[in-house]
Image (tube, rainbow, N blue to C red):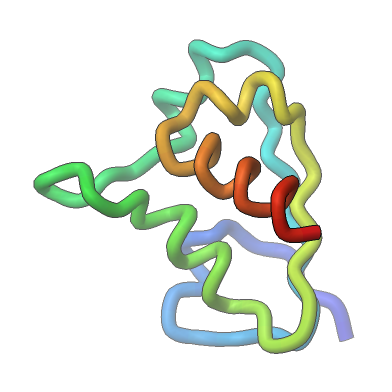
Length: 83
């Protein structure tokens, strides 16, 4: 079974495999993609996206554009150094 929805709608639920498409093709679009908490210590959307997959998470996106986001840059660095 396949379901398609927004990150916000997956809040509180999980799936075995999640494929996320980050549709940004210009660094300025990162402002629209990110959703920080009050003290900007967490990107709430990214947190939900990363924590809903039980087995596998596949993220599609332009790493150059994504690296303009504070937490995306750190996550991409972690992936590169770990895998």
